[in-house]
Image (cartoon, rainbow, N blue to C red; front, side, top):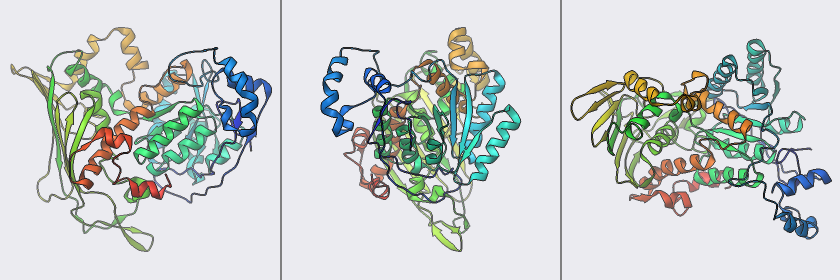
Length: 488
């Protein structure tokens, strides 16, 4: 089996698990096997050594022979910064594969089509992967019809990597629990990855993706769209560059509603601890965690209560199974800047529900009606200053855009695109094309992941938890069961 590692140079004793790709609406069987590969060509070997893409200790038979050459080449420094293998993609058409062709992948497909219609010519989708092959074939048919692209279809990443098709990047839209499995398999196969949020199902899973990307010298990007949308860029500007609201001091994000626990719905992978991780804290909540970090900086500690007030059951085949998801949480965030945030949510409060997000600075505040992705998909928020001056969100966005140079505007909103999903895809394509870092890489996704897990870890421990301790792995009692499920 041939597998392109580091874009093609050299592969030594690399374990490639054979994993079927599944989309986020359905889960098929997952089978694993391990295959060892030894591919070596003299010219490729030299390329690998001079670009720091090969570690001689990867293969015991070559360590002694290659060590002197590696030492000599150590004086050759092709570049600085994070090591990435961009030689193959820089300046070339980026061949992409969509891995998982379900619901969220459909939103990504809309984004790719928008980019193509706007005149973005630096990419092509060449493959679609899904264990339910009819879904992959539906994507291929749509792309052929709308854009004239020939798209190969596969049931597994293993088949894709063995196909001989040149793939530079993969867009992973699978259940959370498979992000690290598919992500690492693709990275080990020489493919840069853009992975849906959360980047991994646990901190340890996220670190595995990060370590594999670093080892292979490839890009692992987190597909987080909300902060890229014009509304969230505007609010960041209002608190910072625009100096409109003063220093951020506090925020409250609260939503209460009712979902009758007597209703037995249909099973989906998100309610399964191994596949979903848990509930909205780390699902849609991943968006808000990224946003709060983008707007207000890093979080020092968290205190939280997370509960399942009502048992909720779902129909899976001819059986009823219990949901693993929480239906209530409240959390207090202590930011390193001194800012305080409060985030509460429940679907176990009968009667009249409400939603409120208020973010206050020293000279004013902004309110919004969404506590997961505020200002990302709507523009109904409002800003009010201490002197009583008010701005609706469209006006605030106009003020923000007027403050930008044409160069900065084009960088943030290429082709005039202001929707986050399309912009996250463009960022991945542009980064691979230019050999630059992505805006939200795996490490950024990992830091957000640690905050989400700190909420669960605090609830488990019944005390304040330091985010740094969750990030380091010192605190992982809540995540331990999931890590064991995945043998992490």
